[in-house]
Amino acid sequence: MTLRVLIVDDEPNARARLRDLLGTIDEVAVVGDIDNGQAAIDACRAGDIHLVLLDIRMPGLDGLDTARQLALLDRMPAVVFLTACDDRAIDAFDAGAVDYLLKPVRVERLQQAIARVRRQAGEASANTAGAGARRHFIARRGTHVQRIAIGDVLCLRAEDKYLRIDTAEGEHLIEESLAAIEREFGDRFLRVHRNCLVAADRIRGLLRDAEGNERVHLDGLADMPEVSRRNLATVRARLIGNA
Image (tube, rainbow, N blue to C red):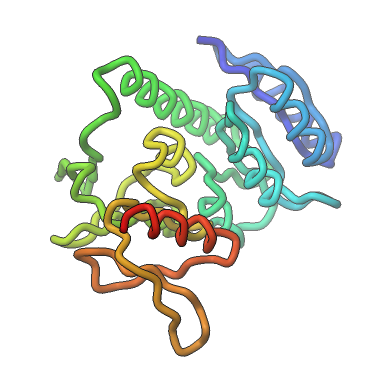
């Protein structure tokens, strides 16, 4: 499949360089290059775009806020962030990025990012084509591979370039994005914070901590993830539904 790519960067020279690099990669089509986040959102809403190469630091709507709005679209594109400074990686992956590239972008790293986008798209397509959603996550540590049953997952949290999965038996790391998992599993996992999903059927209550933050109590998990103000109403509604 030809990957349809949108370039978003406020620097014309950076956009031109990315066009040139993408022109050397097979089965990639640049469908446009634009200089601001709102135009990127409008373009993705109107067209079939598979990947957005998105600069983090832009005037107006920056890359992180743009990515969070792209995550709300019915046809959410994959996002690979671009930046000249290696200080926003955690924020980038919290916002659902597939990868994070430093400027000036090297063609080898761009190829790796595109391969990762294709791999995730292929896995999602295979899961959709099969009998319902997949039943396991795959965690790798060195040469060791472990299958984690979806039904055992209590919480997923973005941590740097990985997702941490919490189960009753312990913690595991996987290389996926929260946004992709949220899209794949629908109501099974509920977003309680920009960097956290929880198993919706394991929600047992809400508690306020000493600092005044709301936290969600999950059956089987001692740690209580924080609930953002933006997601609090949704968690309360789900809690009522689970009662």
